[in-house]
Image (cartoon, rainbow, N blue to C red):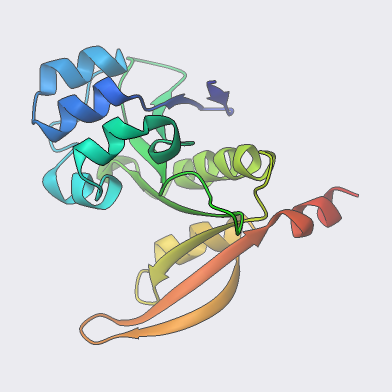
Length: 182
């Protein structure tokens, strides 16, 4: 299911795209996405953050591991991937999904991450059994923290990372969204 916002199409990430990205086959990845990728995307850092599970684990259950993962593609102009919203698999029995996102560096600070994340959160929280969506960011990453705050996430915990400092855990609960809708 494609999600649409004012400026973006958020298209599901499928197994063929993941396989192509993990083996470094840009041509196959672009064919699977039916869109071009920026020269630096997806780089090894993004691949590590987006797909930390081994390919065999993803192949064994792509519907669970790739649950909700989407590419950001602009609705206007050339068909190209400008970022992604990636959940860390389908929520388990506790009903909590974890999410991460990224936008091509040249397009940051334009509200695209907020727009994409908001649409993906609405979708996720409407799925059966999902009670909350959680995200983590370092306190020093002000832009990321601002995106999470703009979509309504609330601080629920703080952890200390020995090298990078304070790690913030934010959450958006389905019941909080339902109360705002009333």
